[in-house]
Amino acid sequence: MLNHACLRGMNTRESFEAVCGLIDASEVEFDLLLATGDLAQDGSAEAYRYLADAFNCYRFSTCWIPGNHDHYETMKQHFRAERVVPSKHVVSDHWQIVMLNSTLPDMTHGHISASQLDFLDQALQSCPDKHALVCLHHQARAAGSFWIDDKGLKNDEELRQRLSQHTHLRGVLWGHVHQESQRNIGDVKWMSTPSSCIQFKPGNEEFAIDDRPPGYRRLDLHTDGCIESSVYRLSISQLERLV
Ligand SMILES: [Fe+2]
Image 1 (cartoon, rainbow, N blue to C red):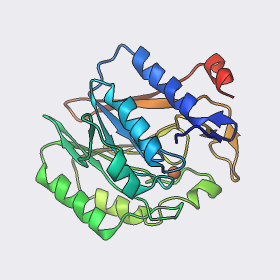
Image 2: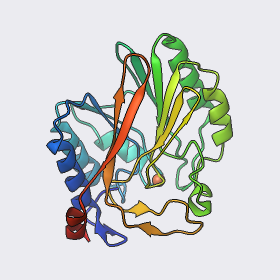
Image 3: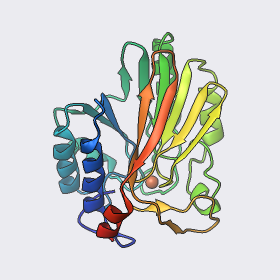
């Protein structure tokens, strides 16, 4: 989430820039940035233009999907730059990444439409020899907190059933829940990523802010289909300067 405003006491732009600084400080050569939605708190053209400029400074491309706080039409129009790519199916030598839109206009909860499920099938069937990572905004598996799962993906079972038909699926990644999680089931790693702003307390039945700092998730996609993934967060002293 991003603009000049504060979200629960944290300035969203300052925390975003601090997390970008964390990425800048990494010695890793990244290939791609996956922006998994809720990129602008106010859905304004100004916010998306700012973000496009920020991501365009990187040497790698950014792929994106909208979140429930985004304004999709404004995003499509203004979240554009040379390295901010509109493609929702990215294919490399050994991997493919599919970006699914799970949002519904003016709704907090999510739903994967029939056309998005068809797009998923067509994309994965077009590259059956490549390992697959699928990204969406809402949680593809329950987080275990009633309040946030109540605002989750309403047809998550249908999505998982469709995903189970693709044996080259290796990972599913989402945002929305403002907390990290990682679970291996069979050959698939199911992952949520932390927010670049405030974090939600894992396992809480009611809404609660966690005291963990903002961060990002890094994924290493290996040629054999293995995914190594870790979360990197700001330090406590960096967090204290944000609130
Ligand atoms: Fe969200």
